Image (tube, rainbow, N blue to C red):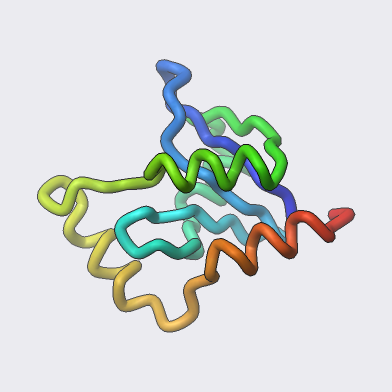
Length: 104
């Protein structure tokens, strides 16, 4: 599992993401979990609107503690409803542990 700081077109950080076996997970601060994010996966492999900077677990932990990945409920109600109902989110501690021990 690899960790990335995802930045928008203005080079502003927007997500902490984890890539595992071609599945991209994004940390959503509103839920406190990592969720499968197919749109981000498609961007990573094809579109490249965002930039992806590899980061380590300490930096990922710092961004998570700062609330990176917080979405406005008014602007993103459908995405947040989907992630809140996600039956299999990943806990940050599990993701960071897997990333720390991964050679992927």
